[in-house]
Image 1 (cartoon, helix red, strand yellow):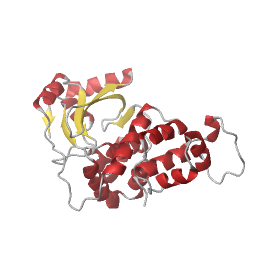
Image 2 (cartoon, rainbow, N blue to C red):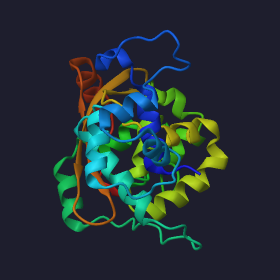
Image 3 (cartoon, rainbow, N blue to C red):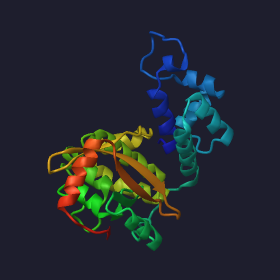
Length: 278
C-alpha cells in the first residue's frame, strides 16, 4: 500500500526528463522519467531504501533524507514544502474509524470586514476543501448562471468534478481540476481531507482519483471563465493564507487584460449586489 509521500516521489520521478538534469539519453528506458537508480545516486541513498519509501514501507524518513530527495528531484520551493507536508502526514496520521468534525464554515468578522473593503471587486473566502464560505457581489456576478452558488453550502471541488457545467464555465477545466485535487493535500487537516477524498472518489471517478494520486503542484496560470453573457474573462489570482487552523484563504481575482476589465465593468454596471457569507 502506498503513502502520500511515496506516491509523490514516484510521480515526480516519472515526470522528469533525464536530459533536463544533464543525464544521458539511454535507448533502453522502458518508461519516461528518472530510474530509481538515477534518483538514488543523485540523492545519495540506496535503491533499496528509495524503493521502501516509494512503496510506503518506510514512513519516517529523516529531514536529511527529505532534503536529499528534494535535491535529487530538483524540487522548487513550493514542491519542497509539499514534500515536507506529505512526510508529516505519512508518518503521523493513523487511519480514523470515525468521521472527523467538518472544518468550520464561519468566517471571522475581521475577514468579512476585509472582504467588504474589496467590494465591488471579485473575491471569496474558501478553504483547501473548496468550500465557498463568503464572497463579494463581484464574485457572485462572475459565477452567475454557473450553478456553483446555487446550493446552501457551495463547494468548488465538488462543482468542478460533479457538475457537467463546470467544463463549460472553466475554459481550462483540466487546470482547475488539477488545482482543486492538489489543494486537498494541504488541509484543513489530514483526517478531514482523507474523508473528503474518500467520499468524492466514487462519485467523481478516475478524473478525480488520477489527479489526487499525481500530487504534483500545478503551474500558476490565469483563470479563464466563460461567462454566460458571452465574453471569456481572464483573471490573475492572489491567494492570502488566513491565520487559524481551518486552512481558510482569501482569494482575490484581478483582470488579466484590458478586455476582461472592460467586459466586467459593463457587467457590473448592469447589476448591483452585496457581500454574502454562506
